[in-house]
Image (tube, rainbow, N blue to C red):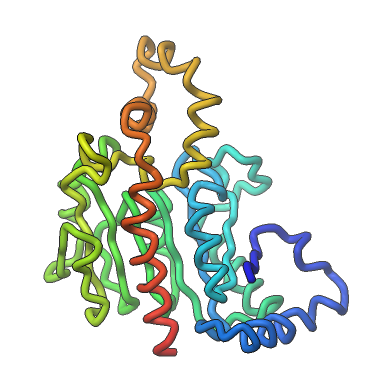
Length: 265
């Protein structure tokens, strides 16, 4: 049963809210869901939105995680706060504890959200996942999963390689990732769609999100090219359109990563 906490109206400010965590735990127990009192935060990238990886959020929620997806100030979906990302994450952690009964946490982010996932104060015992973006200097004890692609024209693979902690095991095929290791990286160097290059920066977003962006932004692409406005690989994605293939290859790993760490708590 998907359980979302990405909007405050979902938890009314009444006495009924205090009963919500108990009801959620009863639902999880009766459904045989694995994570207990675990929540995952999704952090979108620059000019992104809380819906960017809705396919991942829904997948994690269906496994029993409470999933929280905030809007940050530089997003496109109507953020109402100018607070720094760090402050928003801290407030969200407090709310998840208070209103949803969460005791253990994970965090996943795309692009700039990958940086958010690696620098936000924890602990995040269920793990941190950085997709197409990673802040350098990570030395936190929390488990870390990094996903990056050689086809990313925004956050280059070389930049990610420089930021990955020394000694981190790296594989090129998500199916070869060793979940017995505390941390690791998947570096995609080949296309996941026949006849195409490795995934681009926004290939990791949901197909629904990218379809909406194609509808909205395609008419503006010629103008952006003339003005040399960065388009975050949108032009490359128009040729690739490989979100579904990327999701099929990577989402099961992210889910297993969080579930494996949650089971240890």
